[in-house]
Amino acid sequence: MIRALLIGTLLLLVAADAYAQQSVIQRKALITEDGPPGFQTIVFSVEFAPGAREAKHTHPGPLIGYILEGTLDLEHEGRATATYKSGEAFYVEPGKGHLAINSSGKPVKFIATLVVEKGKPASSPVSEQSK
Image 1 (cartoon, rainbow, N blue to C red):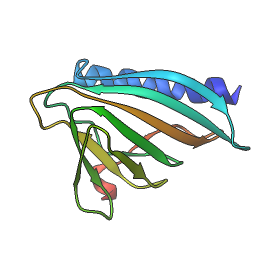
Image 2: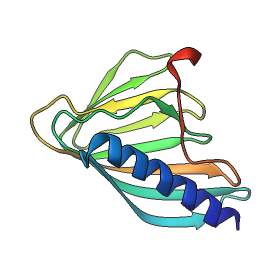
Image 3: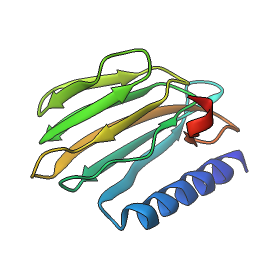
Image 4: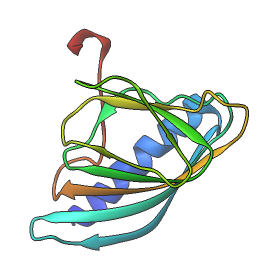
């Protein structure tokens, strides 16, 4: 039940993002597994078209990304904006507002692993008022 709720919430967020971005950001869940205890681990393949920018958001658990191809800029609450290129990894702490941007003229492809507390949405938008 909780797994279905999390997957449904995630699909809704992805669908809303896809509508807003008109398919410039593509996410595909590669695997979803229970664990560690009380959590669920989700691995995604993600592709940002040239110029794509996602909305600022948070996750209730840690996010780990590994860049397969291209260059990604990551704006992260409490840190300076960082640029990651092919072969590099990044980490986003639970609850920290962040957003990724492809400011290059080529696609960016990466793998994202998200660990989410069961019963919580995988992602929540950060409103401009809460900044």
